[in-house]
Length: 386
Image 1 (cartoon, rainbow, N blue to C red):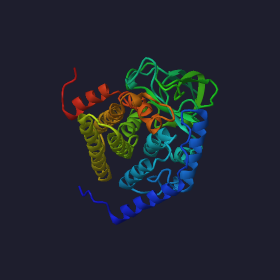
Image 2: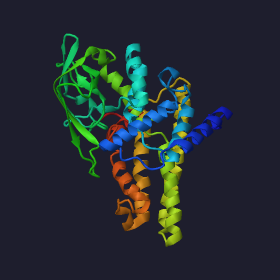
Image 3: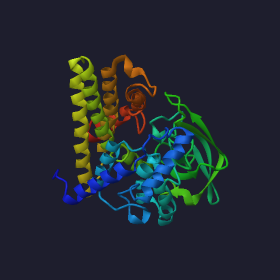
Image 4: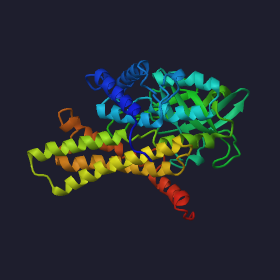
């Protein structure tokens, strides 16, 4: 694989860097996990969309620039390095968007992709259930046919962006006699549908980041069925490949965190003595972030050559989720008791502790790392199932 960037890719990266430097907000936006911050981030999505930076690798017809995966990865690196606001519609543009391109009808693409790219419609993920966890095949929420509608009954939990999202994508059981992977369907549900109740769920830091969803006779038109009825597992696996692989957690996120960690070490060590072992941890974290970067570029090259991620998406997910925890844990070791503070006047605004609390969820969401290691053992190493 040629690891050098082309002149065109370098020019693209420089254009991204210049635009971000001139346009990112002067002050940080409120947390997107509050109602005020959610809307502020929606407005930022519109700014990105108007400048055609929202979905750079999408077709121009949907607001993109039709660039390749390498350019998209370069965009992500510059985006995180600039300190630009988080993307409130990550569930839509990085998870559902690619799934719509793969399985959606032309009418569905035309209906949903423009609003997704602009932030006019923010998406939540409605998969996990109270008794299912990472065992997605055991979901129990039912959707029964009634003419040209499906009638939904059941419950979803831990729905990211679910408190204020406009739409959600759900996996439901449309064949009541089916078990496991069979008889599932993938539905796109308006969040304001009659028969759908949302209840916020607080995060460790107290913000209402998630929602529980309760379906009680909620009617969804068949036009919102993504893929064929009963094909839900195949459609969902396309989404999980995006979720576990390079789409949800591009390396730019961790490269920026590693750079911030190195800067933190320089600042702290300039003021007082630091345990020499912490420097080794900082170096290892920075090296791991860089290794993930090049592993992701290798995966992008494989995809552009016609390959697929396959089980490597599970390896990527285990790596980036544990890297995120270690990056933030190293910062807290460096800060000592000061790292426990989350007030505005704390070191770096308390972002290391809040980031650590969020990172702890990484080995759980997108399929627990225990499940991912089973996939790696079976599909990569060829080990027998227990």
